[in-house]
Length: 206
Image (cartoon, rainbow, N blue to C red; front, side, top):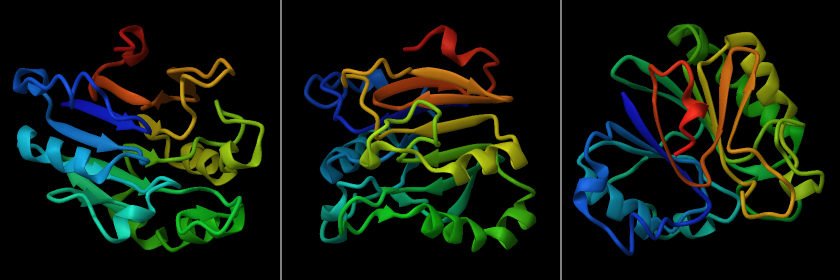
């Protein structure tokens, strides 16, 4: 299964210079947040595959203009072709934005998923907006990651962890690809294509 992960910045390659052939072979599109809702709707219209998303800390506009034809997976486990995908959007709380949470609040969200996690026997892909704590996150509060994400990975050992929020264009040398235990960690900034079955997804970094 080939997945297009996106986040934080609309890709000119996909939006402004669009050619339908660029989406050929893509089986699933996953947004890690902070993208124009019209961009997601555009991809949903021209791809004919599910477009999943979690909220980023700048996605307040989604309350009035939700991405048309897309599926919000925040606080849900979505199953596509047998692959279990858990969504937990938002960032660390630094002001009164609607998609910002303290560490305790994020832990409460995870706790509420307990029965679903039992029913699905875990998950294969963790999709968030913020990174995990000290795993390619920032040192400032707005870009600091959540410790509870590490605990989820440690307990359920998903194959992939997709996040956004930390732009690769920032001054600090943030990684596109990393690995934590057995989990492949991908920063979805702008766009990244990978195969779920690939054992070395970081080799291409495309």
